[in-house]
Each structure stands twice: as C-alpha cells, then as structure tokens.
Length: 81
Image (cartoon, rainbow, N blue to C red; front, top):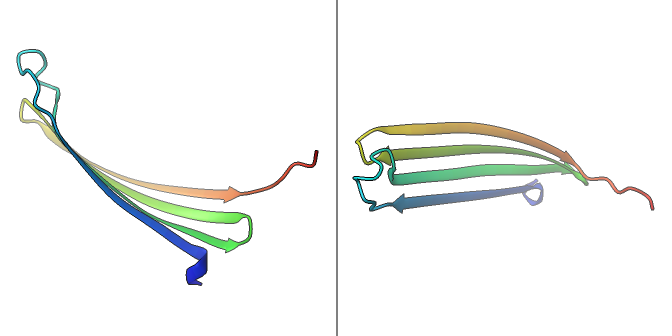
C-alpha cells in the first residue's frame, strides 16, 4: 500500500520591517505550514487531504490564526483525437 501513498510537509516564515507611520495594519510576522496525504487507490484516480495552518501578527499588535482542511478527488482521462 505504501507505493500508493505520497505526502508533503512544508513550513514558511516571514518577518517584515516596515515604516510604521505608513500602515500600522501591515504584516510584521507570518508563519504557515501545510501537510497533505495523497492516495492513489487505483490507476488514474486519486484522493487527497490537506491541512493548512497559519499565524499572522501585524505592527499594531493584532494577531490571528488560520486552520483549513481541504479535500480533492481527481480522475484522469484521455479524450480520443
């Protein structure tokens, strides 16, 4: 079964040093991470699940989090020419 599974994990971060007089709602720090699992149970068909997480802080001290789940199903077919 392992040959029908694939997965990815990533993480990103950003720190921004902006002129605070211009826009206090500008991003100061951003963090994000994505993890997925893709399963191909039969040839030309796949199912995928992904979880995304994010965190944002702005220069005026506000912050927030993001949690998102996604699902995809895909069937490959070829049109006769």
